[in-house]
Length: 543
Image 1 (cartoon, rainbow, N blue to C red):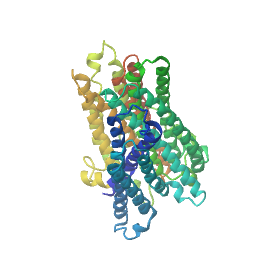
Image 2 (image 1 turned 60 degrees about the vertical axis):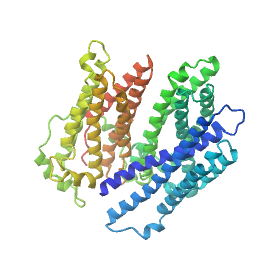
Image 3 (image 1 turned 120 degrees about the vertical axis):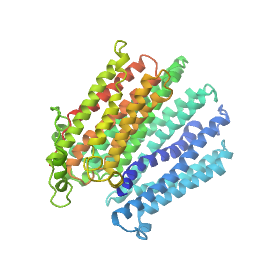
Image 4 (image 1 turned 90 degrees about the vertical axis):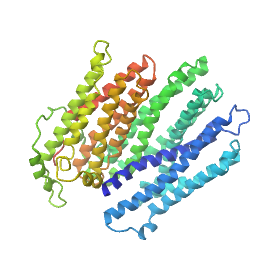
């Protein structure tokens, strides 16, 4: 079960940051955007209750998540050591800081339940709630990279915590805006509150972005230092992905701000109601993926600590160099024959058969996706739509292909049983989940495009694509492994970014009107094509 514990530990960090942002960011929204104590504001009980309920939910979920993180650490250590980690674990920083964080999150949960919900307009109660989260935020400082450094420890801890607060303000505020939009659609709030609160939040959002840059830049410099560390190591690679996704999120934020300014200049609500809410939904997908990437980043050793394990920029670029796809696979017998040397702890020998097997899997998968993206483009033509709309069936075929070809040392082709391989190897577990996800993606999207009244089916594709992208990014734990593992990971992280673009494009295609929906649909299909190209030219480095 060590494999599943390892994998869950990598995912739960992103979940933890999400609920942290909902709780802390929600409080910042209340203090600086909503200001419930303002007697001149046209707030009703529905809005105030919705706001506080979201913060209440975030604090409760944060308690559960933080305790789950501690439990997973115990499980992982017990599985690794082969014995109980107690009582030594009680004296670790991880345990004490994690328990303190859970304790103050629980205190916030109780205070909201017992006091704030009964005094929604009380400034004093809002300030007390904020005071409760101060030690919660400070406890997080002992769970970051900076806490383990011998030099500049306090500065690094302070910068990281400030970075987390800025991210929480942005993400938590976005969740509050989505809740506000839900009330707006139900006509449960005054008409003028939607543009007014959007305008106020844009100011908080700008402050949050500035704080992210002011704190993130010195942290990046301290932990990376060199260009090679930025592009040639897991830490730098994930930071690059974060920067790319933050650029996408800022693009949506800028569009939304322009729409708000246009409203106050012309009083036209069209953009604020027909486009902005859906841009915010896409922005939410991006921000959540950034949080999961940040959690994965926190598990990486800083590039500055592993200069001997970094790749050169030429080696990184070579991973994306166009080449002829591999059409022939080695036999399963040849693959199994080389496994003992490949997985040996001492005297490890690279297996050419395993490398060729992996190349074949990736290249054929890429051909699947590039052909599917071609038919997806044809489906937008009235002439070809009737039959080209079945292009998602390709996902089902790809899922079946991967089911048999992935992890050939385990069931159904290999000698290792299904349950034993799945729950004792984190990599195999992720492959099983990905295979199932790909097959279901094809099943649901085919039905969504064929049925006359698909209901919510069309929305499953972007959500599952976004989850797949998160999996690819949260899966990035190459830390102290060989340079080969990092070079393999480079392509996977880029595919994770394109999976996110695919998800956002399809989501906006479903939500927007023309011409925006057409542009979004094209971007979505283009992202699918790019994933296919990366896979089609994939070559596993053999060192």
